[in-house]
Image (cartoon, rainbow, N blue to C red; front, side, top):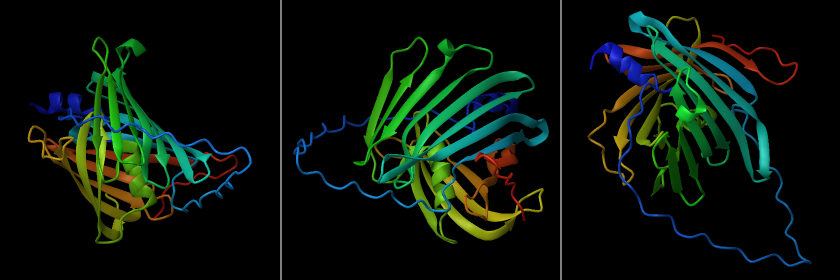
Length: 299
């Protein structure tokens, strides 16, 4: 595959430059258990709201320029995170939304949106929606992936593609499992300790990857800037839903530079693809709280 066709393919994704279909199916999850109704006279006291870590990214808006080698800028990515919400006092969540677009030399324009409900306690998304379509087309041409994960480790993904029957995949996993946004929010909220490796699973559409992220530096100079940041080196290995290695897809490596301040905004993300790296470079970051000043990374 030449560089141009590779780029057109990779631009289907906003946060990572690839998305290859996953393989394998798992059995349907067990039926739920209905709890007994509480009595009319005795009620357990509501638990107090769970404390929120200072490092949890919330109430912010960031924007990235997507670049690739000699092609320069090929797209953009915007991510917005809301305030902490308490549907259940013991389970705080943050809604995170991303919207990206990209094209190479005016060809293969793709728009993609992701919405994720990040569970602060589980450090992963409990529900998410990914949608993508060719630039200039309507919603009827959109492919949508709906995912969810429960406290028992059961994962369910449904794909709704134009002109095709809905496809549903289910599997169990003991490792933390999330979509792309939830995985990034996990690294931001709880970066691995220097020299340690965090292991999790990430779903990109229907494709399942085993992610290993290692903190290799607590004070690294971000390329092409004067900013000092944490540097995380990672690898993504393609696997089937049953845990076996998927030989039909290629393993990937990535590097993320995280702002050293609480919230750990990714200042730069690099993923080697073909003859060059796809680079997401932070352009703007700001708090969305009324009256809050802009918060750009500093050295």
